[in-house]
Image (tube, rainbow, N blue to C red; front, side, top):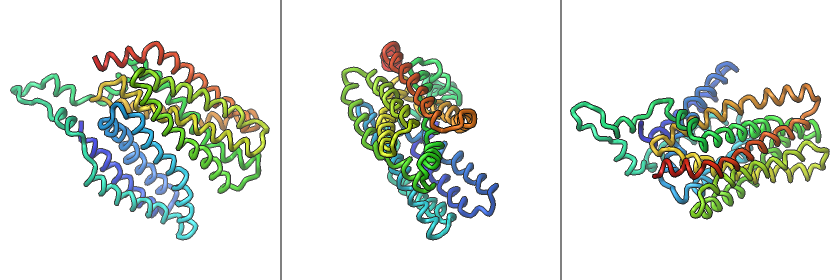
Length: 354
């Protein structure tokens, strides 16, 4: 409905200002409230419009562009956590929020000046209102309803299965990020700081290279066969799952780190193609809305991971037993995606692009 440039830019500015105010919190209630406002009012608005805007500028190179974009997340997870801790140690925890928030405000100003909507899309959104007050078909289509994205995703087989796969993907990642540091502390006696670093460094370091490889391969092979994008995702989940089965074993620490790296490398195969696959089988005017449906569903399911795995740990008495369960989730999702890539992908793509 609105300029993707300004949705993303205002979201960044809102999130950054709210983050700065988080550093001024005087109690836990205010801390949680401000953090929730920052995330809900800024970060949540950024994602759908951000990926949609990137998708506008890239068609045949979409997976590669999304992959390069995704590396910023991997680098951020590793470096920002360390930098925030360093600032907190030197200046106090409040300054981590204030400095990061201020940096976001500066970057938001840069985005306001330099970021551009694609001209063809602006022309298409302008519509045709010279019909005596009656909305034309184009005008109606240019203003989607709030549930149109959900309707499109849940009635398009490829998009629906991608959403199921994404939900399993986020469920496992959330469980991994929540419990792996605790696992390293309990099983190997690592400090909290050391466990936090080791659980992220090997995973996201390998993912950095995996996402670039997967994005490049996806774009090159998709010229001949588009469904290969979803095939790469399916195999990424299955191969990544194999490493999770070994994480909980009584292996040496160096083998555990190797499993972290292998899991991160192959998880990136899914990451590289999420929105590329989604945009292949959904109308361009609904890309942001469909992204919202995918993200909302995936994170709603993923939020259950700490609770479910925590209950399993209590009943089984050990975190080690939960990792094979996470691997099984990815295997099921991966197989489902391989099946649908063969049976529905091309049909859904042709329906949108005929």
